[in-house]
Each structure stands twice: as C-alpha cells, then as structure tokens.
Length: 207
Image 1 (tube, helix red, strand yellow):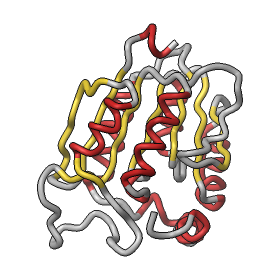
Image 2: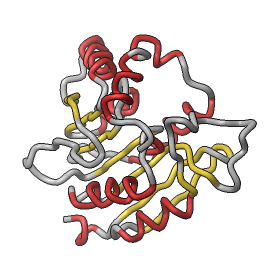
Image 3: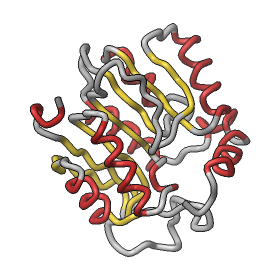
Image 4: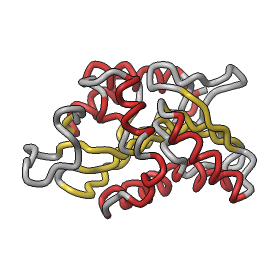
C-alpha cells in the first residue's frame, strides 16, 4: 500500500458527496458484473469490502438474507447509510473495516464476498493476505471487480493513480485466489486494464 489507511480514508472522505457521479462506463460495467455474478440467495450473508457509498451492497440486499458493507472511509459509509434509509432497506449494515480486518461478527460464515474497485489500493502481498482472510470467513464465492492488467499497463489509459494505487496482473490475482482454495469460474474483461474475476469453492470446503 503506497499510502496509509488513514491517508486513503481521508482522500475518499473528501470525495464522498460526489463519488456516485464520478464514475466512467468501465467502473459501472464492473459493478453490474459483480452484482450479476454474486448471485446471492435469500439465505446468503454477503460481505461487500470497500463498499464505498453502498451501490453494490444495496443492489444485493433485496436478494440476500443480510448484507455487510465495510469501508475505511466514514464519509462513504455515511452516504451508504443515507441511501439505505432513503430506500427503506433494513437488511444491510454499514461499518468500518478493512480487507485484513473486515470486522464481521461471529454469527456465522459469510456466504458470498464481493469487492469492486478497492483491492488495487493494496500491494500484491497485501492482496494475497486479503484473499486469505476472505477465504477464512467461509465464503463459497468471491467476486472481484477491479483495475487489473490483462496485458501490459497502458499509461495513456489509466484507471488508477500510480502514486497511490498498485494494481496487479490477472495472473497474480488468479494465483492468490487459487492458493486460498478458490477455483476461477469466470473471467470478464471490461477493458485491457479493468475486469471481474469470479472465484468459487466447493460447498463442503466453504462450510
């Protein structure tokens, strides 16, 4: 991580109010694919890491038993809570948490974990630790939408800030996922530098 958690949190706090209006088509395509591939059911507990203003968490809530949104930015979380209240969604809970410490209560396993445009803030070793943490929660499926390199990075089409972010190659992410006990079941390339990975574990392993 090229910046501290507090520095990242402050950066997102300052953009929380207009964050939803500041996305390009690639981000939105990733969000839609993450929601589609999550396939949360009525008995599923869903964890959304790096939830931001709750776009994905709130989209999944009507289909899930419970959704847990975690973020490092209190400004983002406040926006998410306001949206949930305005939409009358009661089975979602937003609170502070990180990839390493998602602060999920020990009420039972997380069935499905999702994340969109958040993990690229971590260094590659931190990504691996984050994926191991997600696997340790019992998740049977992890859907990751993010900046990721399908080929060589193109400096003319950046989807990240090199001074603060650290995207990985698709191969690096796939290796981390398989090392944590997941199998890659789908790869969606939105752009040469943006995509979605769907990883699953056998039901008996996830239990």
